[in-house]
Length: 148
Image (cartoon, rainbow, N blue to C red):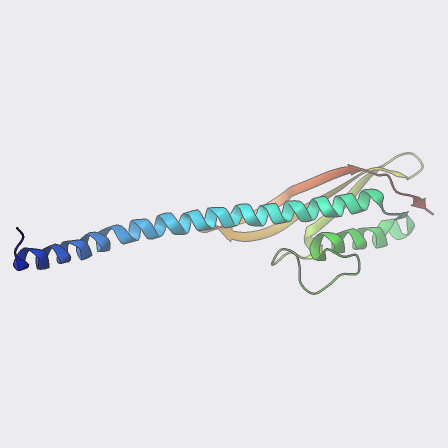
């Protein structure tokens, strides 16, 4: 049988064990959260790039001004989800300046493939900042109409 004196001292042991284990548990759980968050952000970026690439592959291409209007619409789709732009990006901190749109054209200037990628996007994860360079990227075959 345990006396009342022994049960009081066991309560002190539990507090001491918790105090010793808490920093390790906190680091473990916060590391798991940061790791999961980094995967979430990258997945959101990858989804946005693929959406922009699919849009680019099927929309009309206007070759005027080196395709500036075409690029602008695609960048808006990647960042805001709509061609007209917006105020809230699909991924916090993403801007249209970080979206690169390039295409490989044939001898007539008609695009054959269109590549959309993210460059210079930084996010904080796993206790440090990561900067993505040309990742994620998506390349699609151009199936739209060429407008001169």
